[in-house]
Length: 295
Image (cartoon, rainbow, N blue to C red):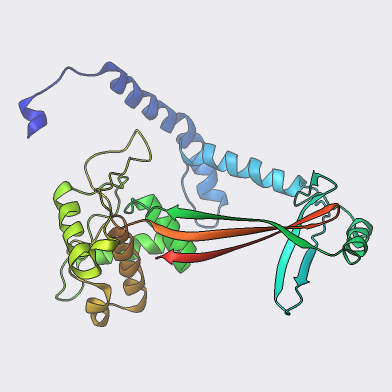
Protein backbone atom coordinates (compact mmCIF):
# COMPACT_ATOMS: atom_id res chain seq x y z
CA UNK A 1 0.00 0.00 0.00
CA UNK A 2 2.86 2.35 0.83
CA UNK A 3 4.43 1.67 -2.58
CA UNK A 4 1.13 2.43 -4.35
CA UNK A 5 0.80 5.71 -2.43
CA UNK A 6 4.34 6.77 -3.35
CA UNK A 7 5.05 5.54 -6.88
CA UNK A 8 8.60 6.13 -8.07
CA UNK A 9 10.12 6.50 -11.52
CA UNK A 10 10.98 3.33 -13.41
CA UNK A 11 14.57 2.27 -12.69
CA UNK A 12 16.06 1.56 -16.13
CA UNK A 13 18.90 -0.47 -14.58
CA UNK A 14 16.37 -2.93 -13.13
CA UNK A 15 14.58 -3.13 -16.48
CA UNK A 16 17.88 -3.83 -18.25
CA UNK A 17 18.72 -6.48 -15.64
CA UNK A 18 15.41 -8.26 -16.30
CA UNK A 19 16.00 -8.17 -20.07
CA UNK A 20 19.52 -9.53 -19.53
CA UNK A 21 18.21 -12.40 -17.39
CA UNK A 22 15.64 -13.22 -20.06
CA UNK A 23 18.36 -13.26 -22.73
CA UNK A 24 20.66 -15.46 -20.62
CA UNK A 25 17.83 -17.92 -19.93
CA UNK A 26 17.27 -18.29 -23.66
CA UNK A 27 20.97 -18.27 -24.57
CA UNK A 28 21.88 -20.97 -22.03
CA UNK A 29 18.61 -22.74 -21.25
CA UNK A 30 17.25 -23.23 -24.78
CA UNK A 31 20.55 -24.81 -25.86
CA UNK A 32 21.49 -26.84 -22.78
CA UNK A 33 18.10 -28.02 -21.46
CA UNK A 34 17.37 -30.44 -24.34
CA UNK A 35 20.77 -32.09 -23.73
CA UNK A 36 20.44 -32.37 -19.92
CA UNK A 37 16.84 -33.56 -20.21
CA UNK A 38 17.91 -36.26 -22.66
CA UNK A 39 21.16 -37.36 -21.01
CA UNK A 40 20.63 -37.15 -17.25
CA UNK A 41 18.83 -39.76 -15.15
CA UNK A 42 16.20 -37.36 -13.77
CA UNK A 43 15.83 -35.31 -16.95
CA UNK A 44 16.38 -31.91 -15.35
CA UNK A 45 16.39 -28.69 -17.36
CA UNK A 46 19.27 -26.20 -17.07
CA UNK A 47 19.63 -22.46 -17.38
CA UNK A 48 21.61 -19.34 -16.52
CA UNK A 49 21.97 -20.33 -12.83
CA UNK A 50 22.49 -24.11 -12.89
CA UNK A 51 24.89 -24.17 -15.84
CA UNK A 52 27.63 -21.84 -14.45
CA UNK A 53 27.17 -23.49 -11.03
CA UNK A 54 27.72 -26.91 -12.60
CA UNK A 55 30.89 -25.59 -14.24
CA UNK A 56 32.21 -24.42 -10.83
CA UNK A 57 31.44 -27.86 -9.33
CA UNK A 58 33.19 -29.62 -12.23
CA UNK A 59 36.31 -27.45 -11.82
CA UNK A 60 36.38 -28.12 -8.07
CA UNK A 61 35.96 -31.86 -8.64
CA UNK A 62 38.84 -31.76 -11.13
CA UNK A 63 41.04 -30.04 -8.49
CA UNK A 64 40.16 -32.83 -6.03
CA UNK A 65 41.03 -35.51 -8.60
CA UNK A 66 44.41 -33.87 -9.28
CA UNK A 67 45.27 -33.43 -5.59
CA UNK A 68 48.47 -35.20 -4.54
CA UNK A 69 48.32 -36.48 -0.93
CA UNK A 70 51.14 -35.30 1.33
CA UNK A 71 52.46 -37.42 4.20
CA UNK A 72 52.70 -35.92 7.68
CA UNK A 73 53.13 -37.25 11.21
CA UNK A 74 51.78 -36.06 14.54
CA UNK A 75 53.60 -36.49 17.85
CA UNK A 76 51.33 -36.67 20.92
CA UNK A 77 53.12 -36.53 24.29
CA UNK A 78 51.71 -37.72 27.62
CA UNK A 79 53.59 -36.29 30.60
CA UNK A 80 53.21 -37.28 34.24
CA UNK A 81 54.22 -35.48 37.43
CA UNK A 82 55.53 -37.00 40.69
CA UNK A 83 51.97 -37.36 42.02
CA UNK A 84 50.78 -39.40 39.01
CA UNK A 85 48.79 -36.57 37.38
CA UNK A 86 48.87 -36.98 33.59
CA UNK A 87 48.54 -34.38 30.86
CA UNK A 88 48.44 -34.78 27.08
CA UNK A 89 50.31 -32.19 25.05
CA UNK A 90 51.79 -31.46 21.64
CA UNK A 91 55.06 -29.90 20.49
CA UNK A 92 54.80 -26.13 20.34
CA UNK A 93 58.41 -25.44 19.27
CA UNK A 94 61.75 -27.18 18.77
CA UNK A 95 64.94 -25.07 19.15
CA UNK A 96 62.86 -21.91 18.81
CA UNK A 97 61.20 -23.07 15.59
CA UNK A 98 57.40 -23.38 15.80
CA UNK A 99 56.11 -26.83 14.86
CA UNK A 100 53.19 -26.53 12.45
CA UNK A 101 50.74 -29.37 11.81
CA UNK A 102 52.28 -30.57 8.51
CA UNK A 103 55.93 -29.86 9.34
CA UNK A 104 56.88 -33.43 10.44
CA UNK A 105 56.93 -35.08 7.02
CA UNK A 106 58.44 -38.55 7.56
CA UNK A 107 58.36 -41.41 10.05
CA UNK A 108 62.13 -41.03 10.58
CA UNK A 109 61.63 -37.38 11.60
CA UNK A 110 58.84 -38.35 14.01
CA UNK A 111 60.90 -41.20 15.52
CA UNK A 112 63.92 -38.93 15.97
CA UNK A 113 61.80 -36.35 17.83
CA UNK A 114 60.26 -39.12 19.98
CA UNK A 115 63.70 -40.44 21.00
CA UNK A 116 64.90 -36.93 21.93
CA UNK A 117 61.72 -36.21 23.93
CA UNK A 118 62.04 -39.39 26.02
CA UNK A 119 65.37 -38.17 27.42
CA UNK A 120 64.01 -34.84 28.70
CA UNK A 121 62.54 -33.65 31.96
CA UNK A 122 59.93 -30.92 31.75
CA UNK A 123 58.84 -27.97 33.88
CA UNK A 124 55.71 -25.84 33.50
CA UNK A 125 57.06 -22.50 32.34
CA UNK A 126 53.87 -20.48 31.77
CA UNK A 127 50.11 -20.78 32.35
CA UNK A 128 47.73 -18.50 30.45
CA UNK A 129 44.04 -18.19 31.19
CA UNK A 130 41.53 -16.24 29.16
CA UNK A 131 37.78 -16.01 29.08
CA UNK A 132 36.24 -16.73 25.71
CA UNK A 133 32.74 -15.49 24.95
CA UNK A 134 30.52 -16.85 22.20
CA UNK A 135 27.58 -14.87 20.89
CA UNK A 136 24.34 -16.55 19.77
CA UNK A 137 23.54 -17.07 16.10
CA UNK A 138 20.82 -15.14 14.29
CA UNK A 139 17.40 -16.69 13.61
CA UNK A 140 17.19 -18.86 10.48
CA UNK A 141 16.90 -17.71 6.91
CA UNK A 142 16.02 -20.50 4.48
CA UNK A 143 19.63 -21.15 3.48
CA UNK A 144 20.81 -21.19 7.14
CA UNK A 145 17.97 -23.61 7.98
CA UNK A 146 18.94 -25.96 5.15
CA UNK A 147 22.61 -25.92 6.26
CA UNK A 148 21.83 -26.59 9.93
CA UNK A 149 19.26 -29.31 9.18
CA UNK A 150 21.82 -31.00 6.94
CA UNK A 151 24.73 -30.88 9.41
CA UNK A 152 22.77 -31.56 12.63
CA UNK A 153 19.86 -33.74 11.47
CA UNK A 154 21.20 -35.26 8.23
CA UNK A 155 18.19 -33.96 6.22
CA UNK A 156 18.53 -33.15 2.50
CA UNK A 157 17.54 -29.60 1.45
CA UNK A 158 14.52 -30.96 -0.45
CA UNK A 159 13.33 -32.95 2.58
CA UNK A 160 13.89 -29.99 4.95
CA UNK A 161 11.78 -27.70 2.74
CA UNK A 162 9.08 -30.39 2.56
CA UNK A 163 8.95 -30.70 6.38
CA UNK A 164 9.02 -26.90 6.79
CA UNK A 165 6.05 -26.62 4.40
CA UNK A 166 4.12 -29.10 6.56
CA UNK A 167 4.92 -27.09 9.72
CA UNK A 168 3.90 -23.88 7.96
CA UNK A 169 0.64 -25.31 6.61
CA UNK A 170 -0.34 -26.61 10.04
CA UNK A 171 -0.59 -30.10 11.48
CA UNK A 172 -3.77 -31.43 13.03
CA UNK A 173 -5.36 -28.88 15.35
CA UNK A 174 -2.11 -26.98 15.84
CA UNK A 175 -2.38 -24.56 12.94
CA UNK A 176 0.74 -23.00 11.40
CA UNK A 177 3.75 -23.67 13.64
CA UNK A 178 6.37 -21.66 11.73
CA UNK A 179 6.46 -18.60 9.50
CA UNK A 180 6.99 -18.76 5.73
CA UNK A 181 10.20 -20.76 5.30
CA UNK A 182 11.38 -19.67 1.85
CA UNK A 183 12.75 -16.44 3.26
CA UNK A 184 16.23 -15.05 2.67
CA UNK A 185 16.05 -12.78 5.73
CA UNK A 186 17.43 -13.62 9.20
CA UNK A 187 15.71 -10.72 10.97
CA UNK A 188 12.57 -10.77 13.12
CA UNK A 189 9.85 -8.16 13.53
CA UNK A 190 10.44 -5.74 16.42
CA UNK A 191 7.21 -6.88 18.11
CA UNK A 192 8.31 -10.54 17.91
CA UNK A 193 11.75 -9.70 19.34
CA UNK A 194 10.08 -7.88 22.28
CA UNK A 195 7.81 -10.89 22.86
CA UNK A 196 10.78 -13.27 22.69
CA UNK A 197 12.78 -11.25 25.23
CA UNK A 198 9.84 -11.33 27.66
CA UNK A 199 9.61 -15.13 27.32
CA UNK A 200 13.36 -15.58 27.98
CA UNK A 201 13.20 -13.31 31.03
CA UNK A 202 10.10 -15.00 32.47
CA UNK A 203 10.74 -18.68 31.67
CA UNK A 204 14.53 -19.06 31.48
CA UNK A 205 15.84 -16.22 33.65
CA UNK A 206 17.13 -12.66 33.39
CA UNK A 207 20.75 -13.84 33.53
CA UNK A 208 20.17 -15.67 30.23
CA UNK A 209 18.70 -12.60 28.52
CA UNK A 210 21.17 -10.41 26.61
CA UNK A 211 21.43 -6.97 28.25
CA UNK A 212 20.71 -5.18 24.99
CA UNK A 213 18.44 -6.25 22.14
CA UNK A 214 20.65 -8.02 19.58
CA UNK A 215 20.17 -6.61 16.07
CA UNK A 216 21.34 -8.89 13.29
CA UNK A 217 22.59 -7.73 9.92
CA UNK A 218 21.43 -9.35 6.70
CA UNK A 219 23.97 -11.74 5.17
CA UNK A 220 23.46 -10.26 1.70
CA UNK A 221 22.67 -6.78 0.45
CA UNK A 222 20.24 -8.33 -2.06
CA UNK A 223 17.83 -9.68 0.60
CA UNK A 224 14.17 -9.33 -0.38
CA UNK A 225 12.29 -7.69 2.47
CA UNK A 226 8.95 -9.45 1.87
CA UNK A 227 9.43 -12.02 4.64
CA UNK A 228 11.06 -12.16 8.04
CA UNK A 229 13.26 -14.93 9.42
CA UNK A 230 12.01 -18.52 9.77
CA UNK A 231 10.68 -18.62 13.34
CA UNK A 232 7.86 -20.26 15.36
CA UNK A 233 4.54 -18.46 14.89
CA UNK A 234 3.83 -18.88 18.63
CA UNK A 235 6.94 -18.99 20.78
CA UNK A 236 4.85 -20.20 23.73
CA UNK A 237 4.41 -23.54 21.90
CA UNK A 238 7.53 -25.32 23.10
CA UNK A 239 8.67 -28.39 21.15
CA UNK A 240 7.84 -30.75 24.02
CA UNK A 241 4.27 -29.36 24.14
CA UNK A 242 3.52 -30.28 20.51
CA UNK A 243 5.65 -33.45 20.26
CA UNK A 244 2.67 -35.81 20.45
CA UNK A 245 1.05 -34.31 17.35
CA UNK A 246 4.19 -34.34 15.18
CA UNK A 247 6.06 -37.21 13.60
CA UNK A 248 9.71 -37.70 14.57
CA UNK A 249 11.26 -35.61 11.77
CA UNK A 250 8.69 -32.81 12.02
CA UNK A 251 9.49 -32.59 15.73
CA UNK A 252 13.26 -32.51 15.12
CA UNK A 253 12.95 -29.63 12.65
CA UNK A 254 10.54 -27.64 14.85
CA UNK A 255 12.84 -28.20 17.84
CA UNK A 256 15.80 -26.88 15.78
CA UNK A 257 13.90 -23.75 14.66
CA UNK A 258 12.46 -23.04 18.14
CA UNK A 259 15.81 -23.34 19.94
CA UNK A 260 17.68 -21.24 17.37
CA UNK A 261 15.03 -18.51 17.61
CA UNK A 262 15.04 -18.41 21.42
CA UNK A 263 18.86 -18.51 21.57
CA UNK A 264 19.11 -15.49 19.25
CA UNK A 265 18.33 -13.00 22.08
CA UNK A 266 20.21 -14.79 24.86
CA UNK A 267 23.42 -13.95 26.74
CA UNK A 268 26.85 -14.98 25.46
CA UNK A 269 28.23 -18.29 26.68
CA UNK A 270 31.53 -18.06 28.58
CA UNK A 271 34.40 -20.54 28.65
CA UNK A 272 37.64 -20.34 30.60
CA UNK A 273 40.43 -21.47 28.28
CA UNK A 274 43.71 -22.49 29.93
CA UNK A 275 46.99 -23.15 28.12
CA UNK A 276 50.10 -24.69 29.72
CA UNK A 277 53.51 -24.10 28.13
CA UNK A 278 55.92 -26.80 29.34
CA UNK A 279 59.68 -26.45 28.76
CA UNK A 280 62.24 -29.23 28.39
CA UNK A 281 65.60 -27.83 27.20
CA UNK A 282 65.15 -27.11 23.47
CA UNK A 283 61.49 -28.23 23.41
CA UNK A 284 58.39 -26.32 24.45
CA UNK A 285 55.17 -28.35 24.72
CA UNK A 286 51.66 -26.96 24.83
CA UNK A 287 48.53 -28.35 26.48
CA UNK A 288 45.15 -26.64 26.38
CA UNK A 289 41.79 -27.13 28.04
CA UNK A 290 38.46 -25.38 28.32
CA UNK A 291 35.89 -25.20 31.16
CA UNK A 292 32.39 -23.80 30.69
CA UNK A 293 31.67 -21.10 33.26
CA UNK A 294 28.33 -19.87 31.86
CA UNK A 295 26.19 -21.88 29.48
